[in-house]
Length: 283
Image (cartoon, rainbow, N blue to C red):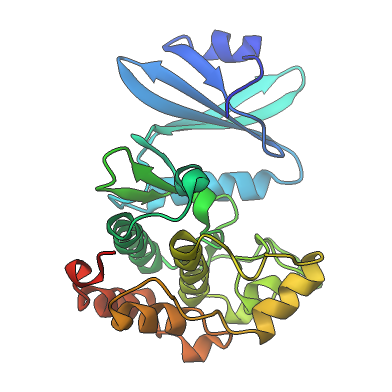
């Protein structure tokens, strides 16, 4: 979905960009597709305010995580305008669409589901090596290539750096999250329990939705409190449309409410996944 107009200051300060197209704004973040030196790029701008630390954190994550499954950071900086201080980052534009967009016609085929699982686990393992928790794995934040052979994890806007001071207040009832995908410890802001196993939980919910066409934590729920209750107390149903039950076992293990009942880290989950042959799970 594309819409809106391009502010004059974007044209002035980023004269190397052409064919700039804005996407709908999301909170304090604005995103633009553009061309620079015949290459497709993404420009993200952040208004510096009370959320500046989180914006800076996103830029830091983008520069720190070296992964073939995360967009490559091209440049970043700041611009002073009459209306305030603007942070920006420029990254490569990936050749695909979000899996949320791909699901408009129903569940994904198994080859695509396996690609998503494999490549997002790779991105999360690379993040885990840097002690980074993404905290927002969901269909909107996964890009699947047009030819369906590659997938990438995007948007580290609420990522947690386990080696730095937490930005979220300990007194907050809920932590930064997307209800319906976040783990119980993340929803309830149990900061000492949040690690890469929280991302495994979110990926499991996402994989279930890609396969079955519905997220049972969200379907028919009456608001965040009911979603939180389901997340904590109702196990994710077992995958129905999978031929190799080893994959169903993995998704079941990753989605357990107690983090100590999930794989101990992303590396373990990825090793488990790689023991499974995708060819055995074709629909």
